[in-house]
Image (tube, rainbow, N blue to C red):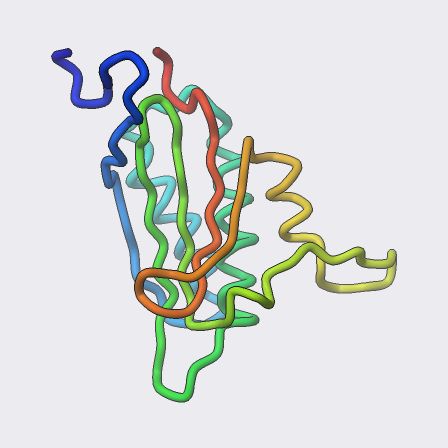
Length: 147
């Protein structure tokens, strides 16, 4: 077991942090998240679609900016992890976890498609309480790295 990403057979893989960023809750943070993720993940040589990952990050950061709320100044936190051969991306904001849900937008609705895109592109996604307080929405891509 020379590779720290390998685990004994049957043992769960340990998450390894491969990047994080903290953003202001402003629209320009979405572009900044895309740019920084591309820059830092590039050295990781992903086997999955980088464009799909960037699109999902855009959607989750947009949701965090639009729907996060707090009485005090706050930030959006984005973290990405390698778990065995999988990639997990977490987006944290001070909103309420119970408010995260997929919508059924009509053709005329401007919003409501973000989590549907994440649901279609990711192998899995979830939402719940953040260890920093507020909400964490995550997606995972299986086999993001070649075995």
